[in-house]
Image (cartoon, rainbow, N blue to C red; front, side):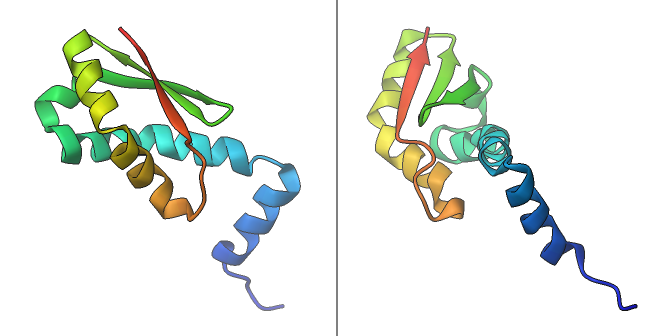
Length: 98
C-alpha cells in the first residue's frame, strides 16, 4: 500500500470535520502580529492585540486611542493583507477596543 502525503489528506479531513472557518480564524489571529509589524513597526504592535473574529469582524484591543485611530486609517490595507493568503474575504471590518 503506497503512502499518501499529508498535504492531500489534511484539507479533506478539515472539510469533513467542519473546522475550516475556525482554523482560518486562528491563523489570521496568529498572522496579525507579523502583518501589523510591517504596517506600523514592531514597537507599535506591542500595544495591539487581536482578540477574536466574529461574523467577519476582527476585534482588536489597543492601549491608546491614538493608535486605534492609526489602525482605523489603515483598515482597508490591514483587511486586504489579512485576507490575501485565503483568496476570499474572511475579515470584512475591524473593531477597536481602547
